[in-house]
Length: 438
Image (cartoon, rainbow, N blue to C red):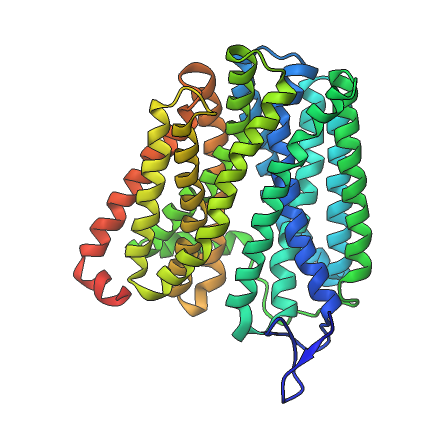
């Protein structure tokens, strides 16, 4: 694929307008980064049930809490390190920090393959999460560096497609690796080592591709860096505005949704497959991955619909529609016992739609209502509330999974979605809010 140029000489990529100095190779590498990041973020938490059940032989009554705790501490590492990676990239360059992120992720994945105790999994998750934090931070930064503001929407849409394809690759293929290796004669430990070693090697190779494919040099930022505590204070003060507070709550739901599906569905499928269907954990994981892939497919196909919806109708109404889908999809799992049943598949289709819908509509809402002078602070708190959603989904979801229902984490977020939906409907009917959002 060769670079394209507009009449004015401006460089473009698939009709996306680029900043000076950015070439097709940089954009291809950037979108490979987007694809790989979600592939890895899907692969690691969703293969954990195989490790917990067949390698560590953890009692099923503990696996929900352990999975939730691993996710919790991984998110803590991400929260604590994203600022560091952003600052470091300003000094040493984006490609270096992106490559370091993939190398750390590779090291963490390698440690997963040799972990034989929960403490080993925790160490692996911490190292891996530090790498994911670096990659995620650079994805946002590279978008700003490479793409002209007029084309950010189109570029973000393509990013979403690559994310969806990465998640489906993990669900449809990578989650089958343990079962494939066991079918070839390996025991559980050998299958785990082979699975994670291969993925560590692939991830290390991606680090090299990032280093040589991304743009060289340091992009100097002239914007003032606001201290984190000041950003937090300013962003929280803005929460006195009802629509901003609603957007924060929607971010909580959107990111928490991702944590619930990523952490607990394959665990549910693995435990059900082994206890009720007589399957091995590896086979149950592979079958669960196929079901999850349907959810990711629903996300991929519905993303453009929600993007158009958010531009065509009242933004609070668009958010309310996605929250309705979320509440119905998650709450309906209360009636599901078999995670492989048609009822579970229908629920996951709705959940997949709700995930991407909440992310898109809440992001558009905060972009519309955040004041220009405080945009960075408001978006910072918006991101933080999403991280808190992941933390609470991990801890509360793990407890409910072990002590109530296997669908407990899903039902919990269905109730939260319903509560935020009621809030959105109240604000939609408020005269001042409706007039501003119309």
